[in-house]
Image 1 (cartoon, rainbow, N blue to C red):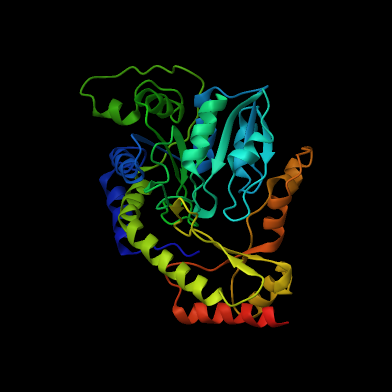
Image 2 (cartoon, rainbow, N blue to C red):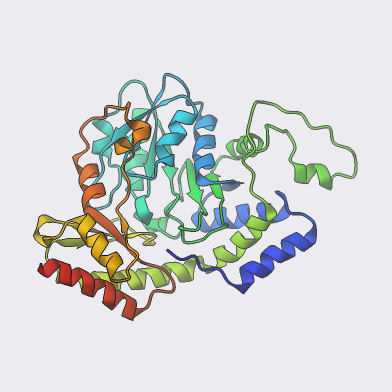
Length: 371
């Protein structure tokens, strides 16, 4: 991944610095409003990362010690870590082979009477089945937190991936389509929840710093609960506003590049590229391919050969339950998760990728498939 950052972002950041307001302020408020409108949510609350967004989502829901939260192991480790931050227990569920996402069936297989919430990930930008999971969560009486870290610009059932989500967490890390360097967002449709999230990100204050400074009279703030410093700066938000204007064009370009990859890779036996699910469209934040036995070359050997020939590919999505941090967890069998993390790799896909680059990458894979 290469982030698309140019003179407009540099100028926006410089303007924020010159304004004298560099902490959380008016640009953050505008970025929240415009991002929420883009993803079809009622309210946006900007925070310091998607990890802190997930943490605040669980705090907001009152999840804590004694509770279980179902999560995919096939995800960046922050998804599971957020559950531990609130003292709850992460329970790993398996995923669908084609999408890498949780399904109603895989969640139902591991949920228990202690299950308080599910964190479902739109993995690599591939949307999960929002209609099915939201309906199931309502029926089970558990909260659904949507980890939309990679999903800006993806859609499900003709709507943005976050539209209709009770609570969703987003990332603006440089590996995502739009970036603020570091940064994240929580989106909700409930105004009361948004107000509490804004307190939680700012030490529990009942009035924001921006409102306090805007008042002509002294404001004596109160701290209503033990909370956190998870704020975004106006410098970051200024960059984010420019990036948000690029989103539609980036998605269009990435989908065109992905379609070309799929066409070029179609004739290689044993290699299965990621595709849109039947109910939605992915932004192709990550373009992964699954290597079946018919391919004839293992994932690690393929990565080594790609690197030797100048291609910066990466291993597939990690599995948290296989990491030392979760060695004390004994999950139910996760055969699909383990296959995907063992046998998939992520190919370069970014705005600077050329057709010649793609031809070279696919040529390396075609050579490996002939061995």
